[in-house]
Image 1 (cartoon, helix red, strand yellow):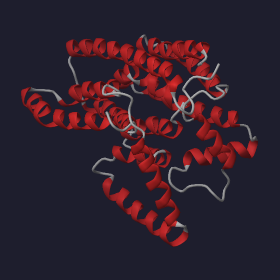
Image 2 (image 1 turned 90 degrees about the vertical axis):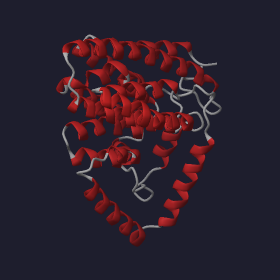
Image 3 (image 1 turned 120 degrees about the horizontal axis):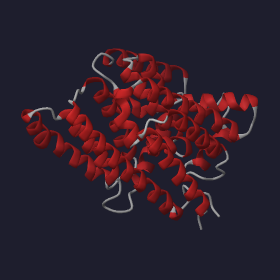
Length: 325
């Protein structure tokens, strides 16, 4: 069975992060991030994807590094040049993710809705489970808030799904770089192995189905909420939202009920909308107060659902989110 002590630790971390962001306690947030880093370093087999990352860490070298999403691999190689312990890599990765989020929390006050709603879940999942996409999240936020191509390219190099954050000013540059990358791949590398690898990975993702029809409903609700706040500003936008954008979200939800990997796409979409909302959406004091209560309530429920998922992951066929006791 799963270790209940681990579940208790995750509860403390998730809700500690939530309340420190809710009440803007910077020192408490820094302390809880430090506790989270320590917990991640000494997590053992905790985290569904942990064993996969340990195997990758043990086998990686400069000859078999993958050109697609290389940042995590380069971090592995750098840590291996110092020590062969997976714990050192985990320390470097989680410290980097924590530093990026803490900088965003201090620097960009308009990101508060993000921090009181989905940040605690994304952060814990980023350092215990989805390490590559977890590093991409804060890089995507910085690429949008700073209008930075540099952070955007780093996000793509961390996880290819960050391509979704492209804006119209970056399309031309991205297209040129993508073409150059394909040419280099065709000329210098065994591109067939890349095609085989990612096609097999794609079909593996398709085989991973959700448990029931309401799986992922928390992430769908998150996207529903932030998209409503982002798009709806007058009567015309309300009409567009309910008759154009909402049906699109319902299609996404139907796919979410079948394929687990859509949850991460939804979370990335939420990160993108939160970032653009922080840049462009202005609300009066009455609306600010209403949205604050709305997002804080949603964040509490979203965190509770995440803890529930952690507890239920004991039944994972390979390895659950909690350490085995």
